[in-house]
Length: 583
Image (cartoon, rainbow, N blue to C red; front, top):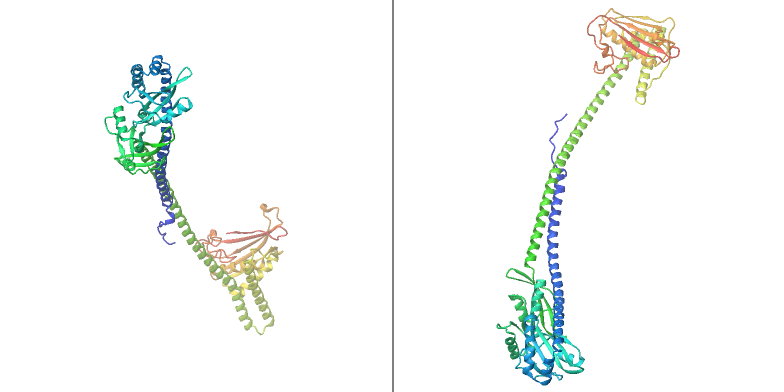
């Protein structure tokens, strides 16, 4: 057997690489996809939050206007019932009217941020501005006053006044009994509403009014009246009239300077490390006219930083967990890979062993074939030698026809035996069976001894002690004849010259075989030394033990001459019996 080669690792055996590499790629892909999806989701979420914030700003702004309008309308209702104010207004006593209205206005200004108080006659001519007593006598043609005059019901809304102030106004028709005596009007700035929205929603607000709706001189007068010491910022054609943020971003300033923007569309601005989202909303007055812009600014820097930190933490945890799983699989698959390699190595060794085993079997087959050929040659050689000898003897006895006939008969029997043996060998390759038939054992022995004498010319004397009544056995005469011939040949080879070989045949009825009708006992004696009886059927003995009746006695070793006994019996009149050997 050849020395087994060491097992070589192949790419197909690398189970760990085949599984873990795709796993690592999938893990990285999942983490990367998560980060990209989280980034896109973050942007959409910020836009969604800003859109919701803008809607909330509009809602809270309108709600603040409604609440303050209701408060001012309630205050006007109380003022309209004050008899002193009614009397002074009807009498046209401006000083007395200011005297009675100023304390109320002062309370409303300090507690409720009311900045405007008008008393107007039924023709909409202003009689007294409590917040600016020196300015009166002009006709009020604002939408709120016009609607209250026409519908004779309270009117309210935000609109610009002649002083350039963007004000929430409430106008109440003023009656004495059933007679309309004039109109009462309160107004307030809306900065506090923007500040309240900023406080509630956490967003910055800017309120801008188009400059074309503001007279420059009136605008300056309005600033003085409202106590604004600093200039209101101006950007392009707009003026900031209200804000809830400290600094206006430069990017937003550029946008306002250009005056080009789209309403209700989110705009992202990054400035000074701050991430801002802007939304422009239209600012309309009570008539529905667009008079300016309402800008919602949401600073998402902190939220975005927290989101990024959470995203990084999640990615780190994912990679960490994936690495742990990767390490576990690496260890497990490493063991699987080692087991698989050992199994492959064992399979390879078994395959090589099987190959060597097949070679050994082939050698044994060839050896057995050689032995079989040798056996056939041996089986055919003995009778053929007899044929040659008898032919030579017949040549010398040519003058004796009777003897020649006997020799020819012997030659014919030898040829038939050879033919029968060859035929049996051919049949043996097809099926392992015996051609049994009733055979006269005395005649078989005599014919075999005669053939042996003519074939071998032994140096020993052969004595036959046959049964008085010849046993008839159901045997294969060809194989028995060859067996006897080979026994005699072996005995003649190992016995000294001048010795005696005795063959005896008799019927026996042993007690152990009471149910049998009879046995034939075949005994022969020679002068050879003791033989090892265990070598008779041992195929490792002489190398010829498997031959039928051949040199199965083996070689002589030591000891005295021995007697060999063959016992054959029949289940029915000595037919088809058993064959035993003792030595």
